[in-house]
Picture 1 (tube, rainbow, N blue to C red):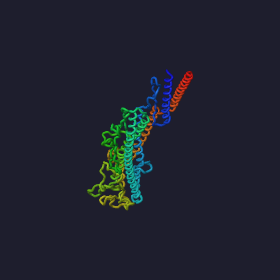
Picture 2: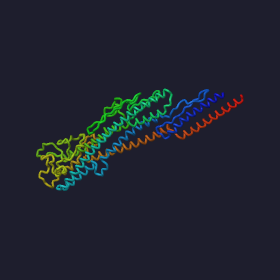
Picture 3: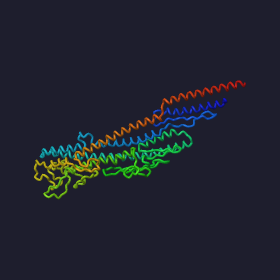
Picture 4: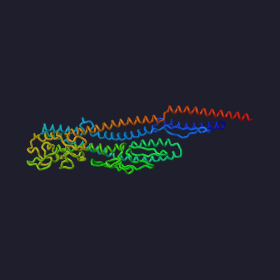
Length: 489
């Protein structure tokens, strides 16, 4: 090998070592960054002209990365469900605190029993009515909370859709840079890292799967197969609903014009924050509302008054508890949406509204034909005992409430509280479990593709020795050329 060829080899080695050191520096600068992948400087030998940097690539593991994406989606969806159920739990809290509908109904049963033991006591009568008022208020407040949770979920769906559209727009810009750089042979590894990070953020909002094509181009689909990105970002749309009532039905989310949530969705998505919020809005909260409505219907039915005429001809009417549809009773055995928000204590028996609490004992709240204590006997207990029996009697409940279709009023209310608590506990445990899976998956991915400082320091020592060897070779060639020139003088 000639001296000039040797010099060119040494110089190419120095230049290549400098480029390798630059890549190494980029790796070290992002040690501990979970969004960074390790970059490799790929060197090739050029016959007769030394070495050069052929390309910069990054370490990837497609299987682990896809697992992180799917787990991220499931965690986000389950966490949205758990957070919403934590809010709904405020309607029951600790049943021992007498603040839940179930606890208050037991308290009402006790108050009526006490009144029956002293039917001439106005204090006992007023106490029973006061507890009834607390029961109605608890059901009203629970309905308000349930609908607030639904409204909040709807607003968060809107926010997630906006975030998703923004992320898809950013993904389009980064993907274009990746394709452009790949075609020109440029280093696109940092853009690829950015694109992966955007995929993780997108997967939080909705379950996705991504495919890579020629020139590192990528397409994104929902986990059900609807296109979210293919060369350009597709529109994700949602029309929020500002006010929620028990009968309100939320709107569906559309991706590329296809409904992906709701009963009309033929390609419904299976995971992500949006899915979790839709489940809260359209399933969990509505089911709990139905249970509250059935409790309210059971109360109105249990305390209803019947015609006391010798030949009864009038229909049963609301007694202690009434509602907006009075004087009719709510249809038996079926859910009346929003009834728990409309139930109230009849003003005729409520002292706070100018009523007479003793009508609870005597009847006649619905009119003269419904008077039970026609003789005005102060020790009359038949009606109070009847009310106790009706509260303890089995009633028919709508199976759509997802509880027993036949139960006593108290047991149905208790089952509703247990249903909510079990749903909350299950959702919380599942969210914690999936969060642990995500943590483990992320650690495994980072271990394979992330930057390891020990490895980088080892490579730095190797590059340092390469640099020293190249420098030594150049110094030797310089000395040889100097000696050669000196001998020619």
